[in-house]
Image 1 (cartoon, helix red, strand yellow):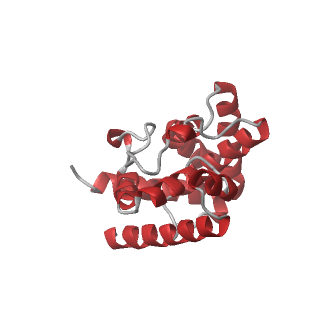
Image 2 (cartoon, rainbow, N blue to C red):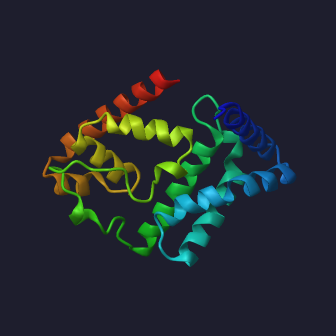
Length: 190
């Protein structure tokens, strides 16, 4: 399996995003065609109702169009930057609608080893997500679960404190240290 096509695809998305920042509608259309399905998948993991997902998807691309000039290729890949926007739009919409972020919370037992979330099948993950998954596996189970609930499911620090029976300040410290560990792990991979 060659890494070169993946690198080329990343460069292509970054180029299209830069052209979008300049107001190039054709580049934006091409960017949409290349990323729409993936970003819709990110949104659907959070929003169950197709109507809500469609709204978040539209808002995502509106934000990408308006903020393309804020993309920094030194900080993230184009698809990662856009996926964060999609995730945040879905979470915002879910919160506005008053939906619960993670109905399976009662099933998550910090005493039991956890596995990769069902929505993230290893065969579907791109190389960046595989690397992140490997780095997440290096965290303590409780810390990994906190990170996933906070940054993937959108749980607040208060919700995490209640779930893990920890003070909010401790939750913040665990999340901060976990993110530093993840960043170090990802930097080592590159």
